[in-house]
Image 1 (cartoon, rainbow, N blue to C red):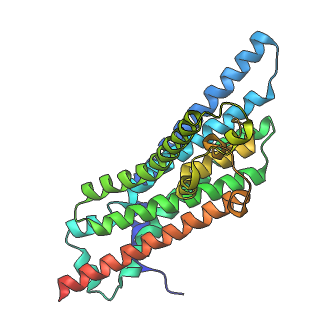
Image 2 (cartoon, rainbow, N blue to C red):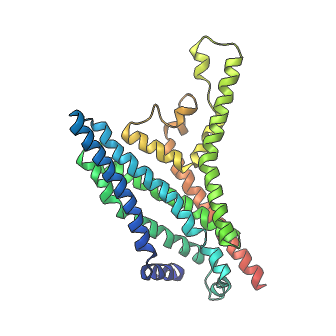
Image 3 (cartoon, rainbow, N blue to C red):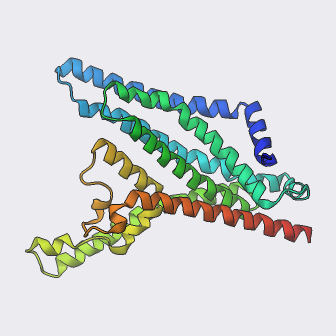
Length: 299
């Protein structure tokens, strides 16, 4: 089977540079510091109070998982948002298109190399995650499910970055656009639901029905809740809350209660599938944009 030449070149360059070892070192260094500080605070608390609260040990898993997710969402767009636009700035994109490489090979090779880099970073953090096994409460299945969430989020953020990179000529503009769209996806959907839920509660209070919990139970953010299906942070928080039993009801219940349904009962499956589908749309758009601009330049 023939290996993608763009992927092969990117991995060769990455393996010969200090970029990947530096990212892995800094990434795991931050995680290790957070984990060790958390363990130290728990040990000090036990020595002072002689009271062992095993629920506090789950904070280690929550802290490490949250820090890793946040860093993934910040690092992945930065890696991919300059891939295509960087080739265009160096004026090597046209040369790549004249070598017989098609736009799919260019985009998939660039994105594949970035995903492999982030996958190595994620796998290298497993020893830090394994510290929670000392206290129990988290199983290997939970860690693997969290790994699936990380890979899905990395693919979503990476495909968004490479789509912006193929759309804009400058890497700086592409990076800003990628972070802007990602911020709207994460913070924007949460803000819209918060606003819709606040307006629904306000309308219910102004209607004069101060008695009767049945009416209050129907107050929610409406159809805006389903915008959270595209939000990687909401998916991560739901998985984390399900594994650690933290939070007062979860992310979805923050925006009101509603009757169960197909999507609500299988929210995590739908959200992961939708985010993977959107990743495919971003990649397809990037391929089309590279092909269009390549044809336009060669015409």
